Image (cartoon, rainbow, N blue to C red; front, side, top):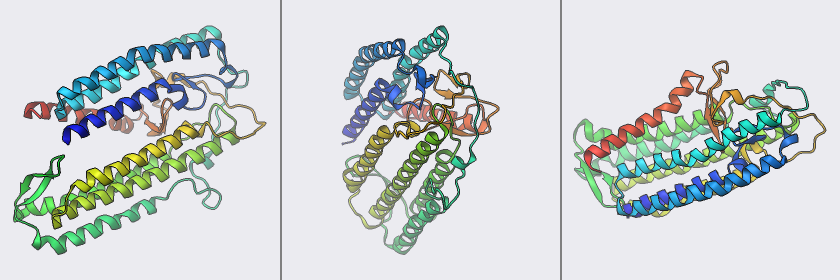
Length: 376
């Protein structure tokens, strides 16, 4: 069962990477072509269209065989360490064609002089970031997210009530088949920590993380570029609201899942309900919202509004490393809308943003080294 889950995850990630890579310009922000900002008046340029067709052909010929080989090799070795290394390699390799065509697009932009015919202006509209409450409730409020603390509170109360009836020792880990393979004695601080404190910390930490993501990322800096002011405002409002709703639904599902795991420990329920019910539900939720997000586009770019206003264009390529990583020391923002792909990026020019970017890779490297040493 564990092997099936790991293989299924690798296949799912491979499919996502292939589709998002092949349709990279569809998933990119408004006015972005391989990570390069192109004014709307040049979007139908023959050389750009030709470049995209060439990219799709070479991307398929290069990446598809690689993904197939990687997935076949994973069948013969499903250690967690190899699994993590494989995910890391897949992400890096799938971005190589994008970097190559980013350079080609930069060169084409310079050669053909792709510059807006209008004025190169900067527009600031604070109503998008902090809209009036009555006029536009864009995202789910922070207090609504914090209200989810009721779930870990209920879990804690049930745990304390049922504590005396918990077996000694009690299980703290289950393999993919749902069989307990790790136990801790109930007596003493270690038992109390694993049975009471740890679940509280996990659930509370999840709420705090998603609340901060909703507050600072989803409701963070909005790029007013490549479109008319009114059009951009309306597009971003829809985009932010959908992503805020997604975060809230995912938060509820994950919290309930952790509570069910806890109740399985307390009352001896079959933990397989997680594999057969909650994980598929969470996966289905992500797929549904991914389809919706694809339909509206990054930043809501596919939502069209009639407007006679002039296009806002600001050539900001210099702040985007390889067209994909935002680095602007003069910008205090920690999170910004992704230029390539769906969601948000961090500002590498901000020390906090750089830390947020680097820390996950450090943790993954530590896990890989640990699992390799343990032979897992």
